Amino acid sequence: MSLIWLLGLVLAIAAVGYALGRTRALSSTNGDIRKLHSLPSYYGANVALKSAIPALLVLVVWLVAQPLIVSGVVSSDIPDSAIPEGSSRGLVMSEVKRVAAGLDGAVAAGTMSASYAASAQADMDDVTKRMRDAQQITPEALTPEILTAGQRFRAMVAQGKWAMTAVVLALAVAGAFWGLRESHAEFRARNTVERVTKVLLIAAASLAILTTVGIVLSLVFNTYEFFTMYPPLEFFFGTTWAPSFSGRGGSSELGIVPLLWGTFYISIVALAVAVPIGLFSAIYLSEYAGPKVRAIAKPLLEVLAGIPTIVYGLFALLTVGPLLVSIFGKDGFGWMQSGTAVMTAGIVMGIMLIPFVSSLSDDIINAVPQSLRDGSYGLGATKSETIKQVVLPAALPGIVGAILLAASRAIGETMIVVLGAGAAARLSLNPFEAMTTVTAKIVSQLTGDTDFSSPEMLVAFALGMTLFVVTLGLNIFALYIVRKYREQYE
Image (cartoon, rainbow, N blue to C red; front, side, top):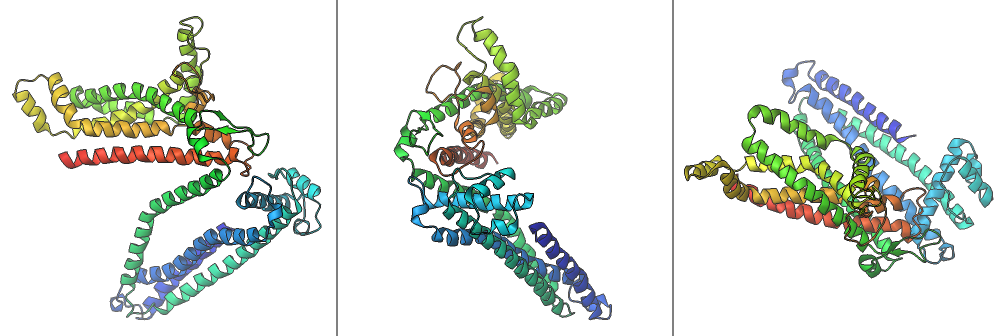
């Protein structure tokens, strides 16, 4: 049974339980609602919650735990001789999972029967051919050990799904009967439902934290796997980025320094464009523009924030790049060879960040107390002097926080860099040369058939972990500054 159908059945049982619980509560008082402790809807909700919540909780835990348990059991049965030199048991398990998924896909596509997919006498080349005919991803070399492990993984997952279905449906039905037994006049259904609702709200509030923890753990585990295969010192301090996919990482040089340099260089150019324009726009809108102009100009400026980044990337590739070549290329100053360069990506990324800087700075400047302005005017200062000597210094912590948040947004940008900056990993001060960033290389490393058995693929997680730490540090620093500013003026 598919997961969608299972969820549908659980919700259907809960809905039926709601109707029966409400009806049973009313019948216990012969239809006199005044004799009930709670409203009839609370009795129905009590049945529905006790039917759905335990079943769905077990479903979630089962979906999380089953892959770990099955992987552990299958992995322990793989002999050490089946693990190639330079690889690891975890990477072999990724191939086993790919084989299991390929067998499922081939059975679903009709290129092999279910009995043949589970057969211990299946021919390696024939199985590989049938999976490829079904357009499934296959390992480079399918070995008997990996095929056997894949077949066992597939069988255990199928058995686990049937067991999960039986347990979840049994819990849903048992919860419904439990709730129905409580549907009588003396039961405090309202209190129970309110407590459960509070717990659900707390769980929803914790979801973002748990999601962040899950993201970090996935990055940490795969980064650790990468550093078991590639020296950390060479990764963090190497000045050459030259991955080779011909083998399993024997001749690759994976130094992150040129990627970090390109990331920060493009971000600096973007901030050099976005900060002055965004800040001046915020000053005009908050200090000079009238209500009518502000009501029109600010929404129009913030429209830029809603444009997809791929559109900005196309704008960089088709418009800004050729324009810069016509000015700084062979027919102009002779500094620029092609449209893909740091300057191209930086200018377009800066345009994208303008509404980000402008909107935050505008809100921060408007938060400066009017009494400070009135005091400056009372001392004879002009409007421009008041802005320079009173408003901006008072708003400076918040403006710095806005700039740092914009910087973290620039560091994490991908599509503008991919289309506007090129793919060259180099250390150079020339803004008219092509460079690349950490995010662009993450995309390129994971493009195509991903085989997580080599450092060239796993390096994407190390790059992502490095970028996560950098942007997290910037965000924490920016939020600290903004919070300190708000505590001062609120």
